[in-house]
Image (cartoon, rainbow, N blue to C red):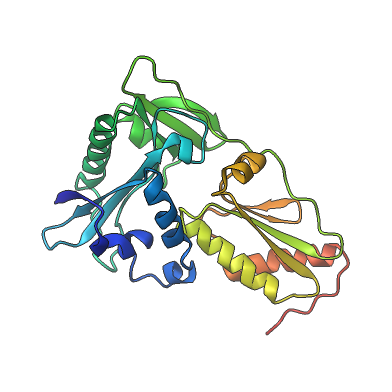
Length: 268
């Protein structure tokens, strides 16, 4: 296994989170590719873990905190560490120390760039991006909001602890239509998938529903809303981790339209 900087050879795979085989990744569209092209000029760093056959089996990407969806400065923020864990594609490469090696390589790179520390979001649950995993590697808690925990590892004594953004507002119900409002940052294909599914569902009900997309890669919009990615049906937030299916979004929308007394006819 070898850790290398992202090269053109692996950009396509990186933008699909190494899941080139996945239909859902194709369904998510080109949002992450567009996000990558914008942020590569803003300090985004990506490292890839290659196996002995030269296949990408793990990745980590991180950027200056000032360009990321949190409140912090002088630090590098880890968007995610991901080791391919499916039987399809390149196969399951977990439990081989790849994540640990990627994290160490990113920290070494950030130190060389003059960063005062490293920070990452994590979940206080035994699932993807566990905050406990980072704590095993020297990180400590900086902030919490429900199941989400922001952890950090200072490199310098004058490093300032980062803080999570918190939801600042919710959409107001549409006057004549039910509003599907989606906050989309672009960095995560799973949330890009939510965006595309909600958009397509809204199109099935052109007289009763409207789709509103908020680009939180715009810093002003990000701080106005206080969240990078979210989905609302009118003022009700929909859980998006893991991404709800198209049918699940459709059912929630139909339920809301019925509640508001709108005539509903499900297409198909």
